[in-house]
Length: 180
Image (cartoon, rainbow, N blue to C red; front, side, top):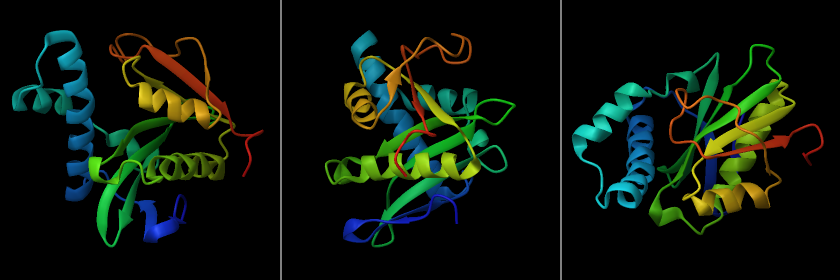
């Protein structure tokens, strides 16, 4: 199964439909995590439930379901602890895009984020992608550090402000040269 990986400490990472209740819960937690950071930085407050519902409606994660993408969910002892999405970025299917990388607070610092990133890269490589791209925000310094440590380099903007008004940092990793 593409993206499935055994990990230390009984971690497993496997595809799961975006529409599954557990997936929806992880994706909602991801959004609350990144939105609260943005709202605190820019408005001095966290998000409201109405704002989260609006953001989820405006930017659903449907593109992370086959055939255009996949949502990988990490578990330990049956409990979901994080997720990452991979989707095709271009029509020529040479570039994949990393989306919705999230590790629940209790699992942070356990090595799960690098494992999720490796599973996403493996999935993209298995699909035949030559590179993987991502966008993020400047204030998500932990994410930028993770991506940099794992071979991603800064690139010019590859999407429009209409496609992602919050993006401030764009990165890419060549999968052809990356270690398998």
